[in-house]
Amino acid sequence: MAIRTFRRLEGLFCVYKPPGVHWKLVRDSVETSLLKGVNTTPSRPLPREIRFLPLQGNETGTAKEITVSAASVPVLSKHPLVTGPEFQNIKVGVGHHLDAFSSGVLVLGVGNGNKALNNLHQTRDYTLEGEFGTATDDFSHKGRVVETTTYDHITQEKLDKVLAMLQGANQKALLMYSRVDMRSQEAYEMAVQGLLGPEGKSLPILTDIRCIHFQPPSFTLEVQCLNETQKYLRKIVHEIGLELRSTAVCKGVRRTRDGCFTLQDALTRNHWTATDIMGAIQQYHATKKNKKKSSHSKNMDSRLQLEGFKITTNEENATNQGEAVHTIK
Image (cartoon, rainbow, N blue to C red; front, top):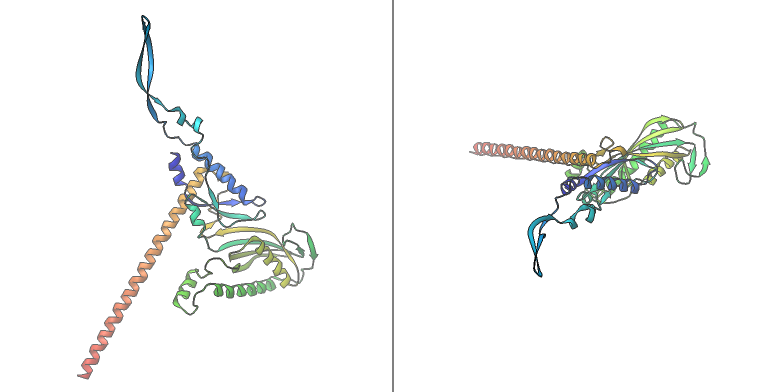
């Protein structure tokens, strides 16, 4: 049962990392919960062996006769109290890291899921909370204050213009690192499906940025990016303040999506148990299968449409050729 339970735990899932907690502590807590859950399942029965056990002995003269009988007894050296728990270590891998001051979706992998973590080069969504009027040495509100400025001249219209300019500059970088001919049909199809992006690792790129809340001095940004770090996102907030002839600090970084994982899929601290994690992994596998089926059906439909177009074109060509021959005759 322990081995079967562990095999069901192989895959990817996500948890919600609270702010102020290092990602290593989150990983260690999940590993401890998984070990506890797997080792509490019924263990395999003890192997048995044949032993000759002595019965009553009879003394006849100077000799002593001993009567033995064969019996099947359990091998106590294989008992869990002797060997210890069946699983003593479960490797839990971590996807794109979150620093101690950030919160949100953190993707983890168990067993074979650790291999899939290396292929997670997908876009991620963040919510950034900023505040105008202050600049610090580490771009966060907890850093050492190095400058204070006014912000009464900042309006949402000016902020939106700066965000549009920043997004345009990053779109050029996205096209430069994509290594796809922009004049090809492949580039068009990738852009329609939202798959256009850099191959492998590159510099941080913002694919989308917009303001969802503006109440000076506080404001909230929604960002979609690739190959980013939380420090880079805080620096973006700082640079936005400079472009508006003011200063700004980042008060919070929250990841709301990592690839196909969202906040609705993230397990909170009370649900970091083997049962809940197993359910999340099974849901991930089911979603993955459904995506494969849908992509396969779309490919089949496109192939059928292409074949139908070729047949129609051939028939029209044959008809036109027949008409041309009749006219010549």
